[in-house]
Image (tube, rainbow, N blue to C red):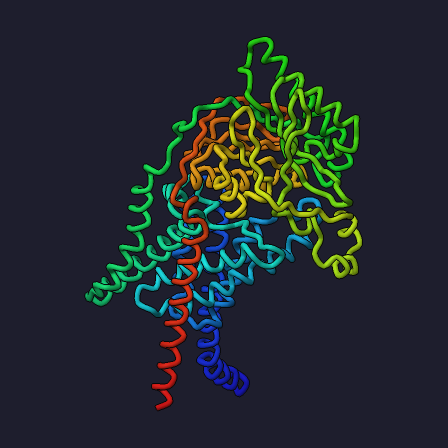
Length: 535
């Protein structure tokens, strides 16, 4: 009886102590889980899926998680959001090199999202907080696109909107304005729901807050509709017939470089096959031909056999070819596009300017070599950067070259258009990443760039997916993956510049200043509040 009485007494004493602890853990775990899951939801909104609209509830939940919290809580919750988003989005970076580099990249990139989370939490107490919070997100993207190692803009919110209603805003202010509109609409959606619940519970309406919430949702949508006249696929400078060659590779993976003669032969063979079809009247004669990045990793300036293969293909098709080569000059390696004339041979070159860290050059080489010598062996010699925009004149048309990784960077694409490009080519090599989502993510970037600058964009890829994209962002032709194929199409040439092209980096600077203003206001309000409390 004594034991039973004591047990019951202990139970009565312990239960009240445990209950608050359980509630505290629930209060911590639910926001943490919601932050990670909302990041995952943002990932699901990205290609190859066409669920662009999921970005809105993703940011609505993120807003719910962060609003009213301390900046320290925002830092942790933002990091969880970043992990939920970037871990699956960037899994392709570890396809051939293992999980180490993939996880390291995500851990570093998620720090930027963590800082954004801290900033959003800080401005969430301000009037009109969705505007300040959306600007803070874009400021985070701007930083991530520049540091470290020249930046990594992969995963910009704008790149998930190629199929969305907000896409015309890319022509207004580029990826910063497009991304800002999506994030603002998501945060505004949460604010509308929050105020509706509060009104139903209390019976009172805060008109100013309700107006901000409604405008945060309505203005991006109305702005996108109003921007639609900026999107056109009409020719301004006539049309040209373009051929994009996808020669394929013998095997996927990092060892595609060891197959470089085979890759060159494959692209020459596909070009000659196309020439035979043109001669037979089955396909229209192209005005020029575009080969992908790394289609000739044997330097044709130093190797007569490679030069002969390209010469033969150019003579067979009878028009200029843009050839993607790896060229050594003065002891330096360049990822180069070469304008190859069927009669005169090489006439012009473009050297890739935004080269890929850990792919085309190795930062911190000695440090990384101490960790894993295999990684340094993969990049034996660093590529050098080009310094000038690349615009080839091909049969009278001005074709801007944006090589693969460069398509993720705003400045590289814009520079070609301001240098006179009437259309854009994005020669790429995705064979390293097998059948991952990488190629579809990159293709979506090219669609956004087409609308941003109102230019036709062709995407010739070694192993797919190659595509023809109209200036309105629509894909008119595309290939499968790991097949030899060619695309031939008459496409419009355009020379007018969109507001995004003319404004360049100014919209991004403006949004960063808005974010800085909101953060300054929040910090000042916090300091004043603490001083008042001390008094």
